[in-house]
Image (tube, rainbow, N blue to C red; front, side, top):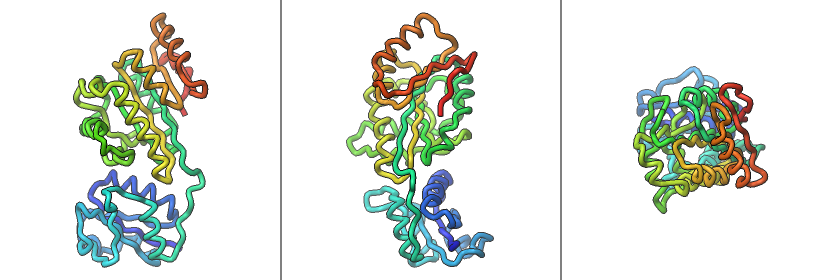
Length: 289
């Protein structure tokens, strides 16, 4: 049975994430975004012509229930200030007397650490070829690069995410409040615009954020992949951070004596089940995903 879900949300990236999540629960739904009150709410779209009923969701930070024109509209954020898609799916299901589809793949999470020793253009060229953004429901990219060599325009959200991560109130789902979708399909807060901020939190701060990213899968019915890009850290810090990954990739121009020694130290200290690759940009001998 085709039906419509109206979402009153001004943030296009948040809407995209909601549409992706709710689409797994209700694959036959037409999910529509409205960024203004009432005027657009009264407009019948082409999708709505095929809907047997509609349910309305609204961002209560931007709209009131009256703005939606639906007295039964459901607020996106719960009392704790988070978006619980399971709660929303139950509300939609009850209203339409339908059962949300269960996610068969369950809760998966994979953390990949990319240790880059190449130019930013080569690094970005390698990342563009990754398949991971299309294999997971929530594909995160987290740039711990100290602000050096950023290859794209960044809104500075990584700065705010890092600052929040040092708070005791920091929760895994907070990560999603700072991300936007980039042109390769990743959800990312971008890179930090403060070169010192990354080094202030050190390896322990990076590990805290990576663990929170992995815990997202336990709190959300979606699978999560996080690609952490590291540059400008000491070899000791890189090894400490890599010990928390499911997969580690060393991206280098060539395997020099110094890189070879680092790789041997890294391999000795990684957990035995960690997938490990060394990729030369000249030969592109390894593939992620």
